[in-house]
Structures are given as structure tokens and as C-alpha cells.
Length: 247
Ligand code: PGA
Image 1: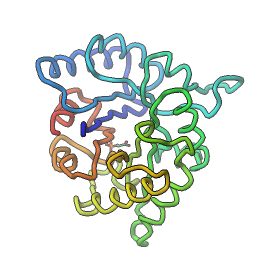
Image 2: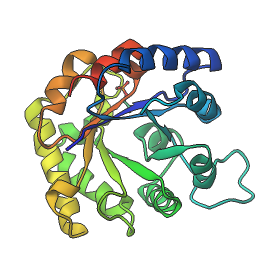
Image 3: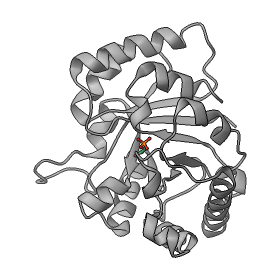
Image 4: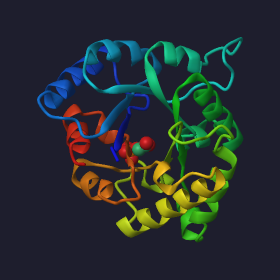
């Protein structure tokens, strides 16, 4: 199956830098047949700018968050409906930075994922354990609990993606071993496929956390890994291209 490679720019980028990124990335991409589904999630104000700069390229757009309600008096928030209208096809929900910094509970994450699905966006639902939880041998307990609480009731084949992002691996340069990634992904796939009666091949789980050009190939070669979610290394078009091309 086609792997999915998603760039999460977080709170980085400007109109000029995103235009330059798009120019460089599409130049690298042209002439090659993109084997993966490539998605870029910039900050909200850069979505339209990037869309125009990407032109006819096969690169898709996503956002990093959305609100649980369709629209209304929610100052400072952005609706899934608007993201859809701007050309987004994906939205990241429940990133660990939002869970930790904005107090987003798994229940809120579930409601955001539900709103995304109802609006025709594919939610990329992030789950993952902290360093302490890992040291205490709680990784699978935490993962299973987050699945139970964050997975929307509307989840069905092809309308959602999960991303396993160990919190301690994000931005740290530290990665789980390939065996550890395999074990956790297997546990996620088994849990989700049972929960919503899907075939295991229908459950997509991306890996995220310190993915770089020199480890992306090995990670994406794992059969249990459906692709990668990339933070820091997605900001440079050249690095992100190498990652996207490594599957
Ligand atoms: P990183 O971030 O690639 O910089 O570790 C990944 C993420 O937070 O999604």
C-alpha cells in the first residue's frame, strides 16, 4: 500500500519561506513518480499561500488542529469546514504538544476527529507515551487507553489515520528501536481492527518522532508502518524530499 508522509511545520514558516519551500520541493518532485502520499500541514495562515505555491503538484494539504464545533462564537479557533474550503484534506488532532500545552484531553481529541470525519477531512490522530510512562513499562497501557478515548465512533475504513509518536522521541533525536516500533504498531493495529471490525490491512499507523532522511527508509520498510509524521526535518524542502523519496 502507498505510504503517507506528512510534514508538520508546527509554528514555523513565513509567506516567503513557504513559497521558497514549495518551489524547491516541487522542483525535486518533478520528473519523479511520487510513490507516497505527501501531505504538508503548515500553520493556518500559510495554507492558502502554500496551496497556490504548490500549484498542480500532487502534494496535499493538511492543518495542525481544528475545533470540535462546525462554526460559531469561538474566538481564535478554526473550523474543519474552513480548512476543507481552503483545500485541506487532512488535519492532525491530539498532537502531544497540544495535549500537554493546551490541555487537550483524549475526549476532546475524539470530538475533533469526529468533526474532521463529518467534514470530509481525514484526522491524523496522534497517540504516544511519555518517557516516564515508558520507563514504568506502561507504553501499551497508555496507547490502548488513548485509542479507547480518542478514536471516534465514526471511524471506518479509510476515513482516519493514527500516528504513533512517542513523546520522548519528538524533537530529541532519540528513536525507539525498529523492534519497538513494530511491537507498538502491531498492538495499535490489533486493538483498532478489533474495536471497529476492520481488517488489519485497513488500519493505517504512521510513526512520528525524530524521523530524518537517514532513518526514514528503515522505518518505512517496516510492514506495520504506513508512513511517517515529520516535524523538524520537514522544514527544509530537501530533507523532506529525501524522506518522501525513501519509501
Ligand atoms: P520531530 O517532530 O520530527 O521534530 O521529532 C515530530 C512531530 O512532532 O510530529
